Amino acid sequence: MFSNETKIGLLVIISLSLMVWGYKFIKGKNILSSSNLLYVQYDEVNQLATSTPVTIQGFQVGIVSDIYFKNVDNKQKVEVVLDIDSGIKIPKTANANIVATGLMGGKALVIDFDKPCSGADCAQSGDMLNGQFKNVLASMVSTDDLGGYMNEMKNSVGPIVDTLKNKFAGSAEGQQSMQDIQTIIANLKSSTTSLDKLMRNSSGKIDGLLANLESITNTINSSQTDIKGIISNANSFSSKMNALDLDQTLSKANKALDSTPELMDKLKGTLTEADVAAKELSGLMKKVSNGDGTLGKLLNEDELYTNLEKTMKNLDLLLEDFRLHPERYRRILSKKKMPYQEPTQ
Image (cartoon, rainbow, N blue to C red; front, side):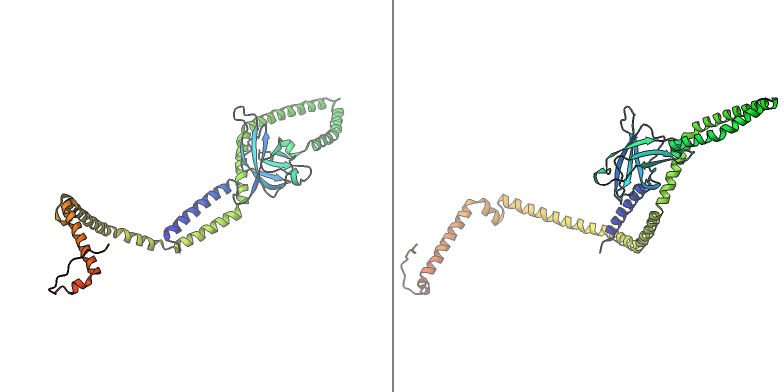
């Protein structure tokens, strides 16, 4: 079983990991899934924000992970980094178009291509895609459709204008009506000009506000399941923390701290005794060095050492003679004297 300190350490590590993962997830990056990074350069991005969804035919396949100047010195190109799901295959010839999602300034990034790709024709992580910025009208209506709409309007409105012109051209009422219509059109033009100026002055703030609001709502909407999982894990985690019985652990820690002074007193006594023993040993070694006692004399006086060495040699000769001629010592009480013979080498 793990100790309480190990459990607390693991708890801290898991909590920090969840915080980092949650922050990355709120930013729109799922660190648990693999993805490819594709790059696009634009002359302008018109307040395109990070975490903007990247879609193909209306289906979200990634997000805008970063926006920065390609060359900080001249600031000619803006580079956008797209974080695309690894399972999505995008041709290298695809166009990444920045489009408006509404009249209020919302932005999206749409990837458009003619035909699917396979193998080496597909863009790999780190490749560069073609980029294009489309205004509000171009985002909502293509060029061909716009031409058709204008022709249809011309064919429908032209006869009506000609009829009104022929009817009112020869009468005073008609001329007055035409003047009134011109005045109304002039007033309407002035009003639309003022409204256009107002929209231009506040478009930046409105675009930023709507982009932030859209980013927040998209992130929350796509993160509902994960947020529920985080809350569930947090509840489970708190339950395990309650089961750890931290009060008992703290009580044991307090008891250990209370017994610390007693242990310090014992350690102090032991060190005192060791100090006394060291002093006695130092005194003993000093006496030996000064020649006091038998050991001191043995170490310092050569004569004592020489006599002791001679005694040991004589004793060795005696034992050697006893080993070689034991019969001499068996008759040691006899009056007959045995001549001494040197032992053979």
